[in-house]
Image 1 (cartoon, helix red, strand yellow):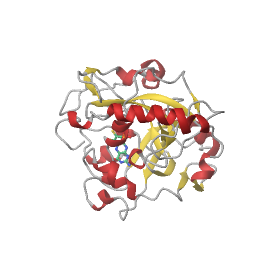
Image 2 (cartoon, protein in one colour; image 1 turned 135 degrees about the vertical axis):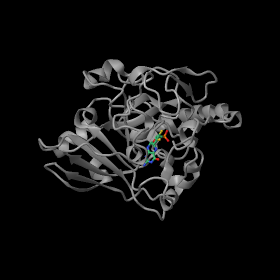
Image 3 (tube, helix red, strand yellow; image 1 turned 30 degrees about the vertical axis):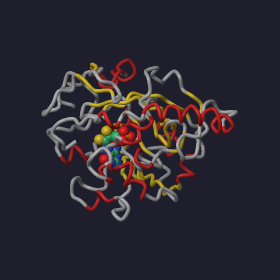
Image 4 (cartoon, helix red, strand yellow; image 1 turned 180 degrees about the vertical axis):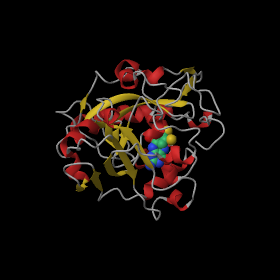
Length: 312
Ligand code: MTE
């Protein structure tokens, strides 16, 4: 995002689509079917264990999903390098088990919980969401996760909790990018409480039916589909309930370019480029960007009366 122009995948990177799709069909036809008799579709994918989940068709788009290869090899994850291709390689060094998440701040049940504790009560759902990066590219990704709202209700924020702040792991020995000062580490993000409680807001532990690949934010990441991708923080170790609006990492780095809200908005350009159109990865021609990334009917009321040029 420090890069001056949106970068696109060179054609040489997208030719292996058929190979991946064939492999996916093969895996579905074999291991995947055997593993998922009860919980809808789960297939073995490309190495990570398959997850059990139900499909949430109501909240899913019917648009074509972006190829698995692109979802997992064209990433923004500065802890593992600033280009799109390094995370797929460098993130493999990350230890994701054991993992714990601290629940802190204005909340009745603070504590450090193991990932297993965090996940235990929640049935997983698959939700196919549009994913729009502020750089001008987009994807459609079948995430697997559960609503953040369910976790928030369980830990019981106090009446003083107005925002939620999320923090990524700080472990420079495994996260090579954290040895460079490109951003302030650890990566942080925030949501207003009503955004965090919105039914579209997901804590995700997988994609394409399998455990989250490390480059996509394993073992647990946020997904907020109506906001630019950088709000969807990866590898979360802390969820904090706070009274004041938190400052997110990109906002701290370049406040004139990245605001707290960062709602997808084709009418408010980034100071250095237009946000009116986007390139869907795997497609040739650009398409129009939709207000709130196509989730306007569901989320517009959260921002009623707000000047979205001011609160960008
Ligand atoms: N989370 C952390 N911890 N570090 C990052 O650099 N990049 C963000 C977001 N979450 C980032 C992060 C950006 S800019 C985007 S567009 C999305 O992750 C990319 O998610 P994806 O690689 O799964 O597509």
